[in-house]
Amino acid sequence: MAFDFPDSYRYADSHEYAWQDAAAVRIGLSAYAVDQLGDIVFVDLPEVGAELNRGSSFGTVESVKAVEEMYAPLSGVVLQRNEALLANPEELQNDPHGEGWLLVIQPGDPSQMDQLMDAATYAAKVAAT
Image (cartoon, rainbow, N blue to C red; front, side):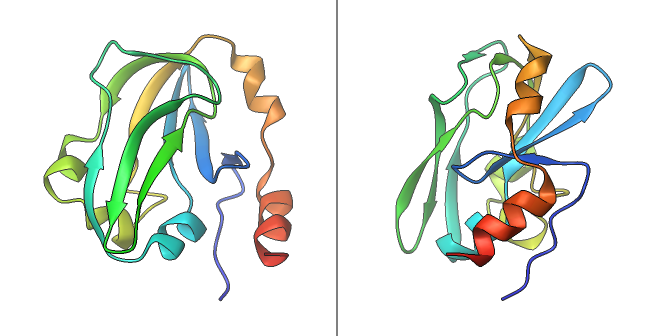
């Protein structure tokens, strides 16, 4: 299956994305990760003000197939979480790179974005799996 990964996003090995918008960064799960999960029934996200550490778990996503941890692609402080997604987790499946975003954070070290994969590299990784 072919996936569309926005060029302006950066991707972690664990399939989370980060998209920088001014000083804040939006975090979500890639379309590939969402597809692998199947029907999503529950999402658990940290509270606003929580500190994320790059590579550490920040929440879970539950599908009819499994419960999976989500890992922070960047360190930072949670500025916003997608409350609509918490109420309607299926939105993650409908638009993972848009309305299905998870968090907005204030990055602690913006240079961590440079350590994530660009869309072409991530697409090649996904295609090889």
